[in-house]
Length: 316
Image (cartoon, rainbow, N blue to C red; front, top):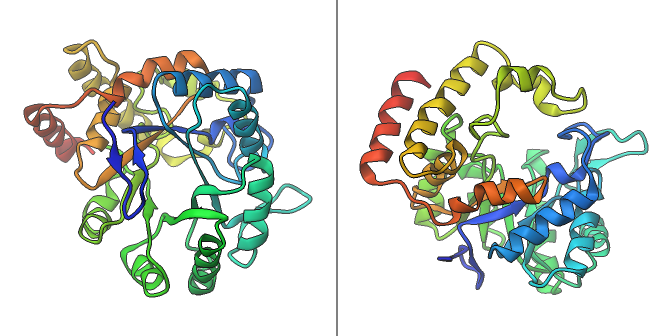
């Protein structure tokens, strides 16, 4: 499997990484509904067995539960991947989630404990909120790197100006923005800036939370669990839902030429951008992981990329 260097780090990453958001389980503000931990562990093991060499999680996923599941999986895994996590979203006794950049050090200590590691390979600020606290928080991130608690430090969901502010304090190894056929906002400024400045890009939601897998239908959306955040997400509501499922149908036809799913095509489209180091792909079961592993090697031709571009320009 080809690998690509992440920004200024020494880490060579596989084109796709295992995304651990959904394995946090249900009963929190941004859950994907109920999830069986044994299925999650099997999914992680399958991803590592197939060659994926990095996992991306966050403290807030399942309010600590995702990190704990990752730790359980790694205890019995044959391979040891790079482990990335994030800070900046905290919760209270009522399980209410909020933005807070004043607790970065405590969050890091908690993540180290839950993950069962001495060093986090890539520690990321989850959101640049509150904006006025970015500099102070990034200073703490730099300290954590100097102390060896984080090997590398990065950001997530940052704008160009916010990255520039952070760079005045300490180098930024990576940025993690959303990027998909449906959400292309970062293509104009953020991705070119990262590429020009040697900042790696780990894109999340390349299949836009399942919409572009080719397996999503209006019926499935209607039957999503009440605690699945997608039930209330704008792209899962009409008229956007019909538009998005049409995109999935269109790219599914391109995938059919090669014997791959719409989801694999969606990921390949994201990886086609030269600024993107790797794409985060969630997996809730070993079967799901097997279904998208082709995305680690499948690439669109320039003609197919242009064909998709023309469709998106007209319809999305």
